[in-house]
Image (tube, rainbow, N blue to C red; front, side, top):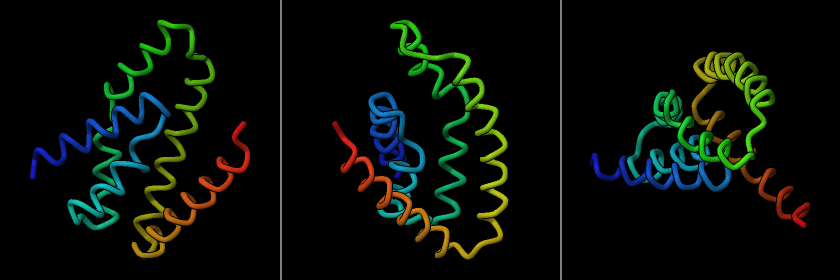
Length: 119
């Protein structure tokens, strides 16, 4: 099963580099649907995998080309730090099925919004 995790990581990494996504959108869905991990385990594993230096290499490439707002990234990181902790605490006390359905609903709403507003 290890090669599947590496392949999923490569796919998530490519999409993270292209679109700034990977963890929740690709890794969690892959671990739940392909690896058959419980949703809370997939979420925690995804967060663990995204710890430094994973994003650093992609961010550096954007920085080299002048496409990284360092100040905004630092402010986002501060918010993400607090938000990830709060979200993880809430998720640990909520029924996993509700968290998984909320995630699916979030993805649907965001997909429709991006489709409609694309230029």
